Image (cartoon, rainbow, N blue to C red; front, side, top):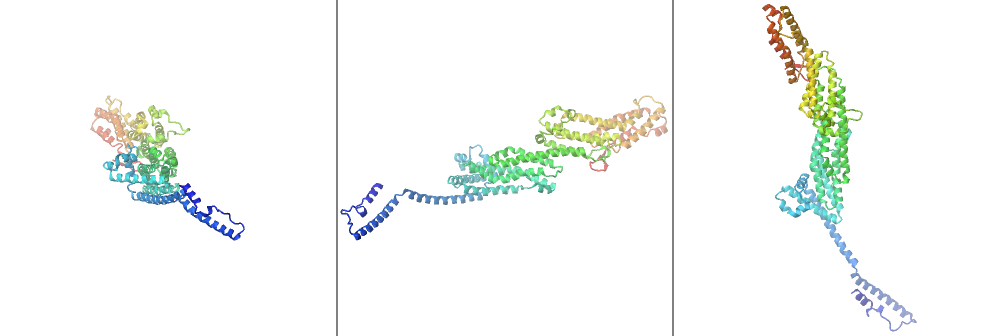
Length: 581
């Protein structure tokens, strides 16, 4: 057709300009020549115009451009509509796209290959019977978001889609983190806080860690992976933009606290709580923030773990130093419990609760310059080879430091008997706490047995020094025959020694009922029973009733009653007063 059209146009007999002249123009007539030239130019222009009109109909490129221009306009209209739909779904379904709904939905469909497969195989109506209405609405909203995202990305409008999605979802995550009490703090701010305030913020962080890992970040990763499943790069960039700032703030808080200069007694255990929270969630952290672009988040969490472990080691060293450098020279009345013993054992008991975490932290500790405690002190070789060997060695060091300090404090007592009673009381408290706590598993049965034997020796030494003169005042064989003079002298010595011992030991303290009964029973066997035999056999030996009244000041029942009064006074560590119970 083009050829025919061109041919008809170019060879048409009605086209003067292409008609052959049968007679050549006259070259002698100038007017005729000019007229002919003007006529020819006019007809050529008309012919070109007509050709242009016809040829324009055959211009394929111009027709395609017109159609593409219209398609582009329609596409822009469609994309604007999709942007509006995307915004409305994200805004109006904030409650249905909350992390809890997304997580619940994900857990219920985890056995399916994907959300799309689940929807196509079962249909929304089929799952409606087994999931809650909220979860169903959540899934429908997620499905709509995915359809819109796929369409916009395939049409070259990924930028517009991502901007809307990121803006709304980031505001939700930021709002959630804010409500959980997480804020970005500097070390200077932490140092100015009172411990009660900082302790409260740490508690809030511990709770925020549970919720954010279980719900906020995990659910956001699920949502972004699902909505932008068609593009790995987009789902990664979206998740990074939405969560990075909040995640870094969350995982950065422990590092700032660990760097703080204040070290109140409870700080170590709060640091261990935070270390536990991060380490127990480490696998989830690596899974949720697995993208290469989220490496900063993982690095921040790791930095916090490192800084926490360093601070814990430093605080443990400080605790050991405080024990060794305790310079309080005030004597505990009656050889009772020293405040250092009570405080240290409470501290060690709490440490034992964190034995697994502490074992990880101090596995490479103590430093090379610090040797392990002598095995003769540890006693139990099993504890050295056990999985908790690092913490066992550390606890043993601290125990050794405490017992050595108590030994030095006992030397301040002028009365040797009270000095040994002080050691017995404090060691008994140590053993009792060990038996009732996780410390028994860290130190072992042999440690307890050896130190119980040591405590018994302290108690025996106390008894020997406190009542030794009373014991020797009585004959080894209380029933052996005696002269009246010998009997009178024996009763006189007993009266003097027993009265002196009683008034000297009446102020002594034995807080532990088991140890108190043990000491009393031992004294009773060696003193009350022996004196009763001696009294029964030699009361009549000394003479008449007047002599009995003169030389016998204590009847066996009196001795027993006096002994029952011993060690019942109580002393509270930190108090200068004692009271009778």
